[in-house]
Image: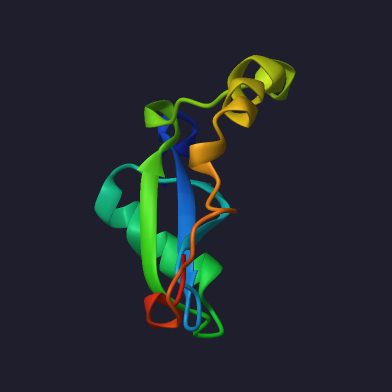
Length: 96
């Protein structure tokens, strides 16, 4: 049996059958991307919940800290053009 303690950690994202976006489902260890994808399928879509999987090496993800939320998100509040509250959006546009 191989030593799995040295295998990299992968983050798994699943897109549900009726979803528009992939959502984080969990993490797993695997020696490479192909095995991570196969293991993710076995572990996170056992009931045929998904239509698409992403596996991403954990080390490739850069995330902000909740402690930094004011620094990152507060400046956007003063840019009203980023919020489509005063635009007329035609019904044909759909999701916006």
